[in-house]
Length: 152
Image 1 (cartoon, rainbow, N blue to C red):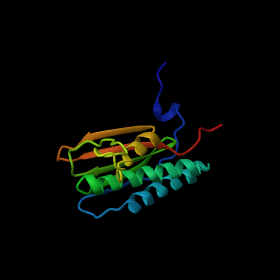
Image 2 (image 1 turned 180 degrees about the vertical axis):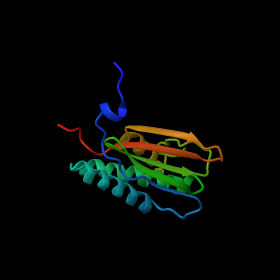
Image 3 (image 1 turned 90 degrees about the horizontal axis):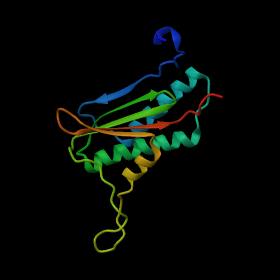
Image 4 (image 1 turned 45 degrees about the vertical axis):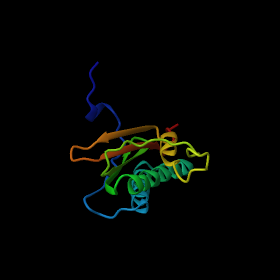
């Protein structure tokens, strides 16, 4: 049986996309603000509350992606936030071709390492994570974090 997406499936109302590219000086707070706006727009459109704990997870993922781009990726080259069904999709681009890596809590001398926990946090909290090399150099990391519970 063939279906026509435009008439046979109920679609969720579109939520706004938040995209920033170029030479801006974006901070984690900018990306977190875009996540909140996208989730609130979808909440209003659906008339359903989001999961507060899940939103906190999405905000932490946005913070980690942005902080890692600033600390390890040569700065934030851009970001994109939008909704993907019941989840928020956060993409952060940086200027580095280096892939993210998880490092242990101890250095080579057995001393406690400062940092190194952001990437494992992103991988644990996100439903999907994708790292893509950009044609102009650098990479884009996209994480999808569910924030709405399934409708009953």
